[in-house]
Image (cartoon, rainbow, N blue to C red; front, side):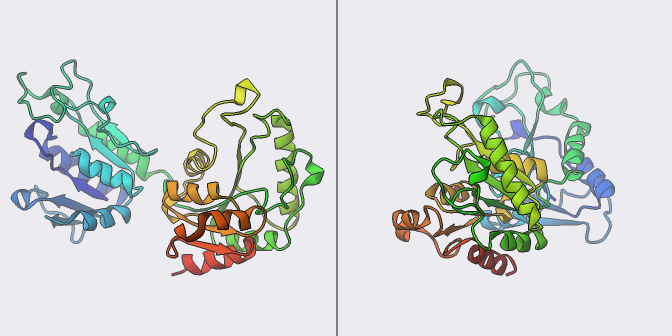
Length: 355
């Protein structure tokens, strides 16, 4: 894990000895190795007493890309400065941000789904937008009242959880797993594309959590109800299970902003390419979205992968040929592929993930 105690302004600094106490306690409880990210002027401040060999390393004046790479390979970051907190959040590693005079509601706090803002809500804050104004009180209560127990408790919950422990494969339903048919609402209409069950079984055996994610705007458009989607999804799961494929999670979005059913005529965060469905799967299954893949036949599937920061394959089944023509040369070869069907996409995925 990464400990980054520095802050741009003195007014925002949490007490150094508390960072040391947090690092020592978490090392003892979880056997994590600590990398202490600091500047040359503060080098040597990590240890107040001897640490076990190889348990703590100082990283001094490292460039931002090197820090980002370190954070991406860590289980947790604890940072004082919002810049480094955002950096950890951006690479997908949970961060505990020790916040002082600035207020999370102002937008300085990291917003990752597993990020924690450790703060004390003093009535005088925010004293300034960036903490430059000296504190006028007898002490900096926003920092001195932030206890080590508060931060350690948050860190314990993260380190004891399954966050970022699994790889996910997010697969579109219609046109990717099942034969594309116009707004499928009858379970009897579900028909597996040849070879998809065997391919999904291979991905599952390789350690991927299998999640089906589909836009089902037929609900919002009034073509069918939620119960029809549920029955159709159950039929798909049944057909796959007969072939030895167990789907870990099957998610769908019933919304559309131009729908005719008022309950579902909304702009939501779950309709692809939004990240709502994969993020829910990440929370429930402990999935590391950075190490995951998306396979689908539409532009929305590819765009969702871009939102998530993961790799994707467009298949030419369903609407895939039309989507390929629309995407054209915008697909980057290092992160995306165009494959004839789901079995070929999983061949590509397994080769790439093994590198």
